[in-house]
Image (cartoon, rainbow, N blue to C red):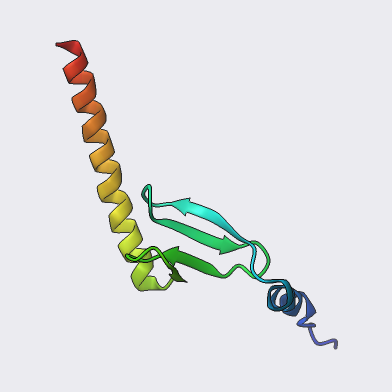
Length: 88
């Protein structure tokens, strides 16, 4: 019986170690807070309160979910307010 090889999982890490990560925005939480994912090794990062990139932990996932909910509700309220003010 053959053992499964670990080369497919090792290659992206080697690529990132040699060339660096290729981060792409995976989710826009607010205008300033975004979540990033490396296209090769799937490492996830987010922006913290100072604007620097940090690893996306479960704690930060929860914080980002709450921020996104607050941001979306504010945007909806502003749209409703703009529609109501344009009617009058």
